[in-house]
Image 1 (cartoon, one colour):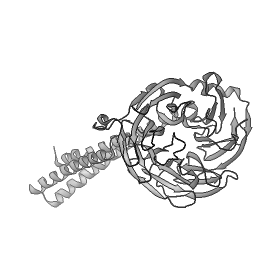
Image 2 (cartoon, rainbow, N blue to C red):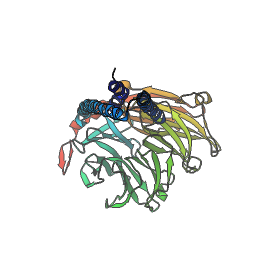
Image 3 (spheres, rainbow, N blue to C red):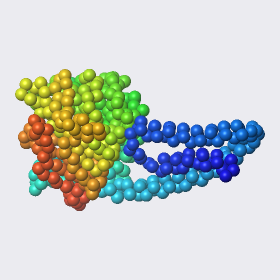
Image 4 (cartoon, one colour):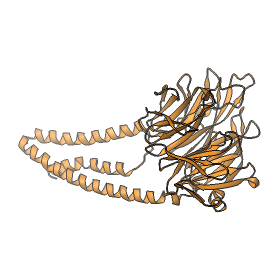
Amino acid sequence: LDDGLILFFALLPIPIYMFFRSSSLRHHQGHQQSQRKRRLFLQSTMTTFFVVLIVKLSSGSSWTTMLDLFLEVLLRFLFITLVITFLSLSYIMLKVRRKASESMPENQPTRVKSIAFHPTESSWMILALYSGHVVICKGDDDDDKSFCRYAVSPGYVVRACLFAPNNNDTWIAASDDKMIRVFHNRDGRLLHEFQGHDDYIRSLAIIVVSTGRSLLLSSSDDMTVKVWDMESYECLKTLHGHLHYVMQVCSNPHNGETGIFATASLDRTIKFWSVDEDDSLFTLDGHEDGVNAIDFCHDDDENNHGNNTPFLVSASDDLTVRLWNYQTRQQLHILRGHVENVTAVSFLWNHHDGDSSSSSLGIVSTSEDCTVRFWSFRSCPSTYSNNNEEEEEKEDGEAAIKTIQYARLGRGWALATKRGSAANHHQVTIGLDQACMVLNVQSDGDSGTVTVSKETNMSEHILETGQHVPAVVHSNSMIV
């Protein structure tokens, strides 16, 4: 082979690597591991290139000859790079078009993006659908359940919804048309609508401050968090600080009266805020990729008021669930086991021992790996330990006490939990690509075990409810 071809083949792996790297829209290797592989690959290629140059120079080749050789190789390299770049872009555009066609809202009628229970009516549940609809379910027993389906923003994804804590009168939804809408609970009338953000709205939450005033919180892809007055729906404050999409905003059940809440962002951080301050109070930093969801620990003991449970749990694209003590700002544990992005997480139970000095914590998470995983731990004010020491020693860190696979129903996107009639009974609702599953769960805090006593698929109800509600057109919203 001539010298130009030798150098050409030495550099050829670079554009080939660029092609395969760009055609992989998502990768799930560890962040540091993938960086090491990229550095090793490029170092090997460049080392080959310089070895060929040194050999040619040592053989007596003139600098003019080497310059001509370098220009020849550079032209060949640029040509093949352009060809491979064109093929790569064509492949990506084809894949994006196919994925976009499959992901159109009307082609995903049952994908659930958000789930919330009513703050006082425990049998009421509201679901936000990828199709642009909201479904309200009322009733505990399967035979007594009633469903109403509302077309909030046809053609736009509804990513967040919740009940407003004002005498059961209203519910609120936010969609990809950047609008926030308020509806009457009894007949679905549109009461208010206003532009919430400059980009997609990811999450809504309500915080009730010490004066009894209710404030609406919203987070968005425009990297901001907004605080709204729930009577006038006037924006009281816009909070800046995150450097990427703000995926969730969550009010603190223990410090809500002080106006404290937290946000999760794809900038890999969790920030704490006060409705009275313009800047964040502090930041929890530790995830290696974007943070999708967070949840504050609640107290099963209503008299404890969160004194021994300053815990927050987070779910991330780094495939982990992490437990934090937000008072000491320490990361307590990393839970590994999911093999795709972890999209939602929630505390399931918090059982206190008799003296309230320690408790059993239960966590549930879902992921794009189509699984729901349950985790159990023991905690006390000054120490923290995994309930299963053998699993804690595993190299992969997998500590889930129970895993449920929903491969045929698609990826998991949303979670909501509520306490049942007994302290160890819980209801877990999971939003998937092709279903909404309701699990009745029984837990044993002492042994850290979970038993699913009943499993219900609500997908048929979600699809069939629309025909029973009269069509009413109001502004940009239609109820069908």
